[in-house]
Amino acid sequence: MAKPMALILQGGGALGAFEYGVVTALVDEGWHPRAVTGVSIGAINAASIAGAKEGDIAASLKNIWQAITLPTVPFLPPGRQANLSLLGNPNFWLSRTDYWNMPGWTSFCTTAPMLATLAAHLDFEQLNDPGHMRFGVTATSLHTGGQTTFSNHVAQGAHVAGGHHRAVRTTLTPSHVVASGSLPPGFPATRIDGCEYWDGGLFSNTPIDSLLNLLEPEEIGSLPIFVVDLFPTDGQPAPATMQEVQTRAIALQYQNRFWDQYGGDARLDGFVAMLDKLETVAAGTAVEGMPAFAWLMRLRALRNLHVIAATPAPAGGDHDFSQQGVAGRYEAGYAAAQQYLARTAPWPMLRSAA
Image 1 (cartoon, one colour):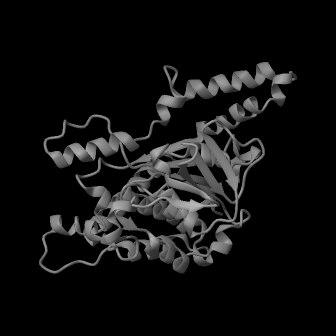
Image 2 (cartoon, helix red, strand yellow; image 1 turned 90 degrees about the horizontal axis):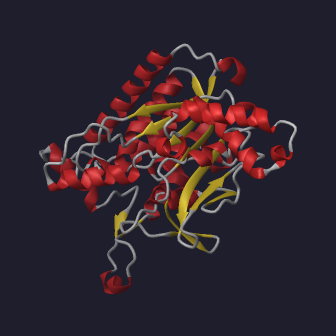
């Protein structure tokens, strides 16, 4: 019997191959997603999971990553191979050549190849079926400055229209996935329904709220939620080169700030214990009917978080789509997931989630 889970997948360019390895290992160990959400490359991975043809998640991820991995150039040193994607990635993006329009450019590349890659490799009819799997991707709205989640499902009690987070149930297309990864100034904004969107990681690179909006009430207390953290930053030495400076700056920008939001001095366990106490105090009062209270109760799902962290990214690793680079990150992710599962077994919460 498959073990149910939910997945939250961060953005990080080529570092997303680590997520590819993590998810493949989880699937190989019998885990199956009920809900998945992602941002940027995590949105592409999430779409490959929800839209996996014939439900074969491992094969779908493999096909997408084979499509966006660059072929090896004979006799070129590995360090140079790692930087080849700066010249373009034929199934992902291409550099613009309309130089006569350069004064009006708002991006250096076009993402049209990725639209075609997603359409060719994924089953979007299945992806839009919440009965198969609940799915969402996040993007940053240029009109509100906040986060928008596009999904095939919005649960009762979800955070639909907060101050800086909007949840939209819609029919998803390759454009919604690409919008989540439209990182400027390399990539252009993606227009959807008259609005323009940039990369969702610019607002939040760990779309936890997006995932919580997909959970049904009976799952909140029990469904394991796996978060893949691509940007661990604790305990790292000071950068020694300009490239290391840039890599560290990117990591700090996109690191998982979840613990600061929900942890505090009492840490996550204390936060969830407070929510349990609040539920008891509010029982039978008017507070129970307030939307803000319903959202707080949904946050109790955070007790089920399981974070699988990558090793610190090498300098320039976010654009290393070489065969060696992708294979290395995949293998690291696969091993990290296996090690995490070995440390945390057994899983008592599965009885109530099944």
